[in-house]
Length: 296
Image (cartoon, rainbow, N blue to C red; front, side, top):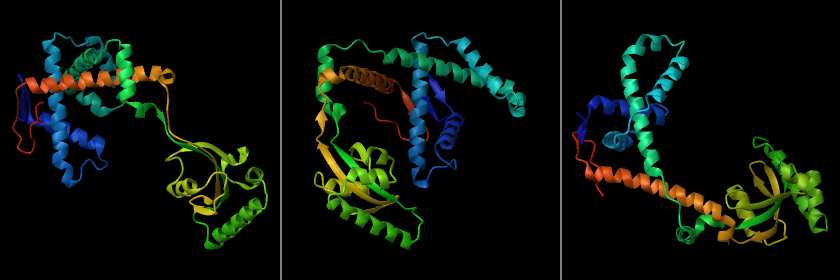
């Protein structure tokens, strides 16, 4: 036996099957790195024990498996594997365990739906949530950036890159001698923003490559950068405007505040419910490589 959970038992075979299913779904070669094996075993153990707790609790509450839904799922299996000789040969022997698991899945779905239900929040709760989570309603600092890009293939020879850099320096000199940046961008830039005179719009941190972002962040407003080599070619940047981070007022985000409050409350309900089951149920694990989750 792998573990006892209340009145239920989890066999070594059940645990091993869950462990190998997890490895096949998560790891490309079906096996975690050697130093992570015990951590994965712990994760799978907690998952399978939690599943057992939920199934046991759903039955204690008198929930009933939706037999029609289970049968409909089995019919989907029959259609999906209609041409599978292995499925046809083993269908009857697999059916019992499959029905049992599908019923358990349905019971867990029902109990999760019930637990996750939240009541309508009061205005006070929503206001407090907004004020406590202002970071969720803050627009990041943004910069309106323009670019002239002379495209060069990454694999192009050194001479091509040098020619592009020389051309970019010539373009910069032209702009500094009263050349029109937007007009030159429209005619000579390979970036899609050329259609807008090089205007890339408002960008926030992470929207440019690190090399481009470093150049843009250091630029004074309305000045053009020295040509910089990027993966796609040689670029000349200009920053047209900078906007600081802005906390959006409650009136603008009230619907999102309610959505996020309900999401978080639902998640808190579900997590607390599972923690309570762990705390109030007798659980014993007989595998020395797995430790019992601490009770809250």
